[in-house]
Image 1 (cartoon, rainbow, N blue to C red):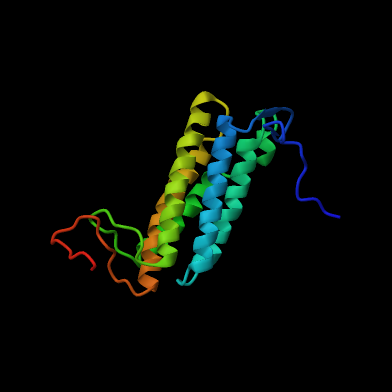
Image 2 (image 1 turned 45 degrees about the horizontal axis):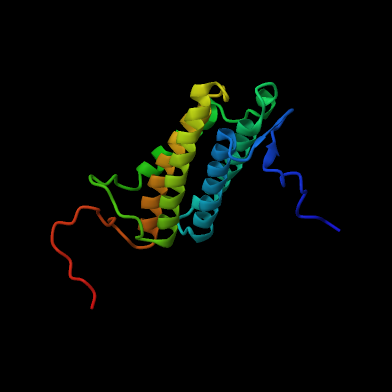
Length: 190
């Protein structure tokens, strides 16, 4: 019989990739948890997306995030063997953003998420990615994580999520996003 639990974390500690255990509230585990949440949010978006190519792109990103979580979870002695996020992967993300930028216009103002289901899911993924970036920055600045490309990747990923939000809104028939700034008063529903 397959067990879906190990009981090894019942004491409030979890293992690192390498020797050692840390409390589950350790900064490293907080960052891994936020990246895991971003992966899940991207999965919701992937399940709802309509634009051609979005699902495959999001799946590739989700797989990158699993590598990223492994490196963050690794001890300094073992981190190198889990390193897959490098300048090349950051460049790949930039290329994807540039391609999307050829088909959608950047709004001149802040937008309100919710113009499409997939777009809203991507907005959630963007905000969770930003939190993961902040938590990972703490790890890089404290020396717990050496690979600065992880920070660049997460930063570009939030930009990709925004560009994909616009693309998905467009694919759902919304030619322009809902702006956060309201010029004329709206009527309230009865």
